[in-house]
Amino acid sequence: MYLSRIYPNPRHKQARIDLANPYQLHATLCRAFAPPDQRPPRFLWRLEEGKTPQILVQSAQEPNWKAIQELFPGYLAQMPESKQLPLENLQPGQVLRFRLRANPTVTRKDPQNPEKRKRHGLKDVGEQLEWLHRQGAKGGFAVLGAMVVQSGRVRMYKHGGEHPIVIQAVLFEGYLKITDLDTFRKTLIAGLGHAKALGCGLLSIAKPRG
Image: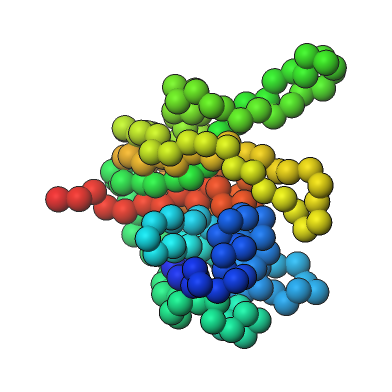
């Protein structure tokens, strides 16, 4: 697995468009994995907002960031940093810090049509944290402590689309404990929840401070 950190140039027109629209940003990132006429492999990404925007990208395939720079000269403020993730160093029972932007949802019956079920974004903090604990139980880890750092609706449009795509995006931070190592590794690779192409699902881990 590869983890890359890229720095889009906020002064670049295309970069500004991408930073304002997760759907468009994903389309640009795809160019690092496949040409426009080919379907790219799946990858996970997350926009880290701040004075200097950064994008984390996790992929099984090594990305070719020069392809984006050639497509949009000046798009990258500096060449990306990439490294391989040493997943083999993880241990059962290990405690880790984590950061996750996710799209917590629940599927409920449609009151207008009881035979159909619709996916709804969870807006209540308590429900969002309960969702996270459920994901951990299925994903090989236990949440030891977590907080919702940011929560809100994200609205975007597809190319030329009239109807917006709206998701509930939640940024979690906290501590977890690995309970099933094989399952946890698969969770890291696959990501958590829905809307992965829109910047959700990447579970970042690090050793506890101190």
